[in-house]
Length: 454
Image (cartoon, rainbow, N blue to C red; front, side, top):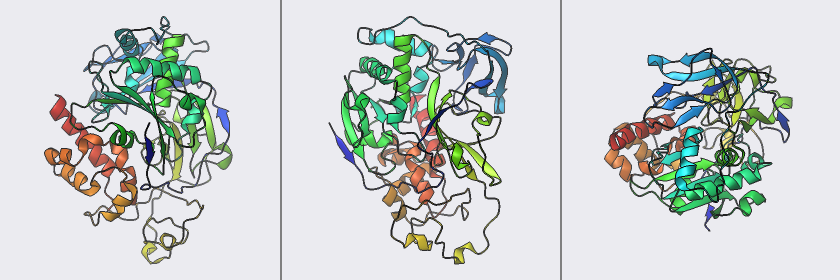
């Protein structure tokens, strides 16, 4: 058992935190299989507009991995197939029936089932789309055998519901999912949870190697867990990663024979009225318009599917992202603040000494953030800021520069195989040069993976 403790990082004191209350949003009239996050994939469409479908019925197949299906989150009639540039499949919208039917599967006992039996079921039922593979954080190749599997049962990104809340009421399904995962690797299944966790589903988990972690964000990032416990040395060191919801989905499918359609999300942010902020159980693929419970009087607003650091901008007619557990809203800043650089900035957050708040002692105050960058992109200035929030054993600025120069041999030596774009969210947040490092790393990982895996 490893104890992971970090001091580098940052818990951003952002206002609009979700209240400690639970709610449930009724099943909306429309749900969608949102595929925007799989922009590098080619799909074979398995249903068309006007077709009647069931929950868990395959709707699209990965052309590069035949047999891996993306399935319907609802039962009803397909009302729209949305496409983007070059006719790329973006979403399959379903008008939900009053009485929904499931595409049911025979039950499987994870303790006695074979590796091949479990893998085949996860592929056909759409669950293999939840398992990611390192290096490159791509969808896991079912033909590969990972040297280890990492399950993160800890969350630290802004607004994301705690792992303990997500597993509540699904403890048996979670354990069944862990049992199944233990069959899919010849190595170990590593379960990482908070040092302060009192959750019995984590503390008493079986067939896993348990580890605890403590520290500020990004303590929940899988890259950190992998580097501390079972590091990736070469591109052949394959590791699979999942979160609590993914494991529950596996256990629910095998023990109940049905696709898991529920997830716990938070609704938060300065752009949401305080009385609406909290944690809600919703259906996968819920429309953004059904999540906008009470808009703040602040206008204009930016709606975000995902946490404030890594989420994507969405509109009313979009849907909750395939892997998102946060819906939040921030004030949209359209105008530059006049002579802002001459102001003391006592009420503005600063990790550096740019504002007066950066010189004050840390307190429990929360700050209002908006979408203003307070400047334009410019060359890298100094690396010391990034080192304060980057707990990974990498040189943040040198790695980003190597990727920008497309020197992937150097980038690999600097740690490219060990990272994901989310590991650069905090360096991007504190960057005085306004460099979009998350986008640079994401693009670099895609290009380098094509070179090595093609």
